[in-house]
Length: 316
Image (cartoon, rainbow, N blue to C red):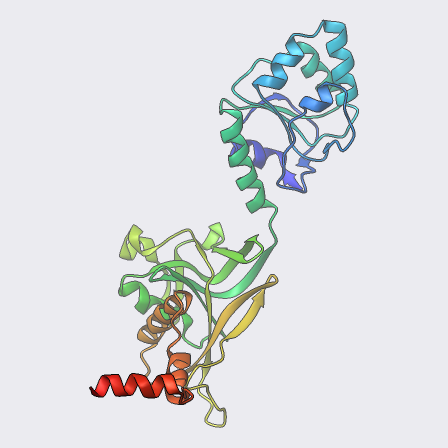
């Protein structure tokens, strides 16, 4: 369900027929162009999707006689359509507007070409209808890698983020991260509007990162590539020192690489986070330092006649 007012505003639509509905029953980012329905074919009609009328559908309607056009549209508006959107600022026939008003179905108009508006609307609906989750943490863009710092309150997430911002990286959200699954394996993190660009530093209070460090220190959204769990150093706990096995955590069903980072006085958190971000980028390019070391240490090739012949050639 999407707010009708928000939908109209976000997509910059002109309302031709206002509906009493406050919410549009849109549950899928897919669209439907009703050319086949205007020709009388209603099998597999995706009536639950937003209906886009382009130049082809409008030309077909306008070439019909008024009585035939009313018959076509009356059948069409018997379905509980979420909305009808007319592209290219085309002028609809009066029968379409009157029947839509009688059926309490909103009709909008956009000057954008049908193909371009289709791409925009699918992208918009994919974001609006995607699963969302709010998480406590700090999200930053570090060398192009989206790093989500998580951990208990007071562990030092904001202080580490402030040092990273000072070193030229960008803040997305502090304290509360709005996570959206935009694809099967892709998460986007943003900041709620009320606290955008704000950061809480214990002992100082709230600071405006954009006002203090400039617009280059903030960004509105970022993919989440790495989760770094900050925790107080525990002498009894055995921490991974090699990193052969990559750990993951699931957010909204998407596996994300996770790294545990123990905190104790004297550790430079900003440099460690930068190193983790660069190391993840190298792994994505196919280079895994720990596994490469393992192969070099434990590599053993069987001795064969070909190897002996090759050694003799090298000696000669």
